[in-house]
Amino acid sequence: MNQDWFLEGTKGYGGIRGEGNWDYWIGHLSFAPEVYDPAAFIVSIGDFAGEAKQFAVKENAPKPENISVMTGLTKYDLVPWSYQKSDGSFWDRNSVAKGVKVVAHNQIQGCVLVELVEDRKLKVEVFPGRDSSQVPAFTGAARFYTR
Image (cartoon, rainbow, N blue to C red; front, top):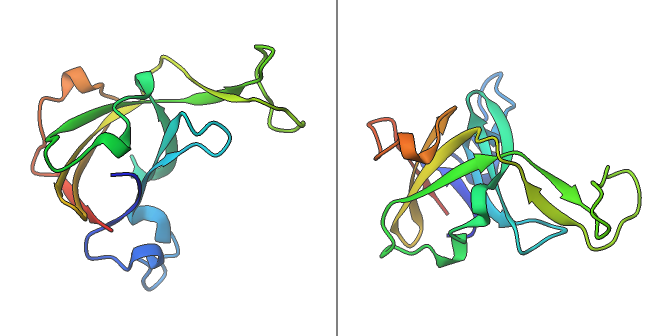
């Protein structure tokens, strides 16, 4: 399930760009290894309550590469994150640092439900302000993303 997904019916990276709409990323979704700490993965959502947002996942699991059609419904609790340097201090992203790691914070900002229904088709629903224990299943608002 790793990497980039696009809202079904949009133009891939071109997005839903139309007359007066330059927010092409609204239909984008990504589950990708973090650039400085590939052991962590980041969920990027083009439309999270009307804003583009990036999150770490509480407990960094299950890994997207382990999701298959056989897995069924998967829930991710979305949390803010920061970087920690090897000495334990937080990295400000303005100085050179080695060995930085993603630190997922505890405040759940929402959850996302995903189900890989075909190899290149993902059912998705985002629930801002709720954690996965509050969301038992998809609703009629679920959308499909393709690759």
